[in-house]
Structure formats: C-alpha cells, structure tokens
Length: 238
Image 1 (spheres, rainbow, N blue to C red):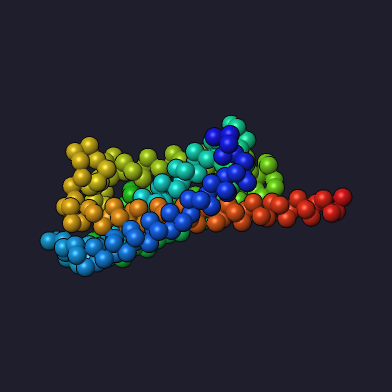
Image 2 (spheres, rainbow, N blue to C red; image 1 turned 90 degrees about the vertical axis):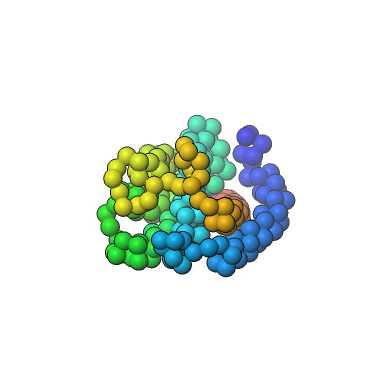
C-alpha cells in the first residue's frame, strides 16, 4: 500500500498494465456486443427490449462499484493520507457519474415498454437517482479540492457518508415492494439468468470495468501533471 502511495511509482505500474487493459477491453466489448445483440435469444416476455439489459445492468454495476471504490479510497486517504487514494477517488467520480446517468437513461428506455412509464418513484430508481446526485455533489466539491487539503477531506467525508446509499440500492428490491425486478445474478440462490444471456452480460461487465480503469489511470496522470505544474508556479512566485 505504501509503495503505491507514491504517484510516480503508481503511474509506472499503471503504464505497464494499460496495454493489457486495452486489449482485454476491446476483446470483451466486441464479444459482449456480438453475443448480446445477435447471438443471445429474445426474452419470452420482454422480447427484443431485453437487449437493453446488456448496457443497463453493467452500467448499474459500475455505478455502485465505482462509488464503493471512492469510499474505500477516501477512507485510506483520511487514515493514512495517501495522495494517490485521493487522486483515485477524484478521478473515479466523473466516470461513476456517467455510468449512473447511463443507468438512469437506459432504465427509463427499458421501463417504458415494460411498465408503460418513463419514470416511477420506485425504491431502486429513486436510490439510484440519489447516487447520481451524490456523484454530482462530490464533483462540485472536487473542483475546489486540488491542492486544498481541507477540501480534499470534505470530499472524502462526503464519499464515506454517501456510501450508506449503496446497500440501499442493492437491497431495495428485497426490503420494499417495488416495480423493479429482484436480483437475478448476485443472489443467495445463484444466478437466475440463462447461460446465453449471462455470458454476454458478464463480458460487458468486464469491458466496462476495463474501460473504467483505463480512464481512471488517464485522469490520475492528468491530476499528477496539474499538481506538478502548480508546484512549479508556486516555486517561481516565491
């Protein structure tokens, strides 16, 4: 952990990993899209509309996964003052916000033919909307956080407080009577999705994960570059 806390060393390791992530992203995305759009069967109830699942469900996974990463990184930053942890949390926020927005949009497109409405104040939908607003709030604070330790701490605290919403999103379909279908993959009884649908779904989840990591590395590199430029400017002013 302390070895990775050095931004320069972290980026050297990340630079070596990037080509593998890029290849894995391209292969899993191509396979996932092909299997999901052309090889997987239509649902017996939802018909061809079920193919929205291959974007909607992995996007929802990523929105929750990224915010969880932000909360963990924020905890590490608050306890051990690792600058890379703060950078990773800030780099992840905008990516997670995009995935949360994509989840809401694709969910609305999927909900219209299934429920007859673009939006309902369902427990799962409402808690996901709250997550999107948490991302936006974090991003608003993060704009002031570069080089400002009190603002960085505020961002970290917000990420930790907002993490309470993650289990609410996950278990909302179990705790309340909702329109949203219950969990069909990560559940006690095992996956309830047929293999021809499960395989492309997992491939798309892998592709989105690789995409997230690639973007996060690029954004951390940008944050590190901005920090170096800021130090040079301050040094010249002195």
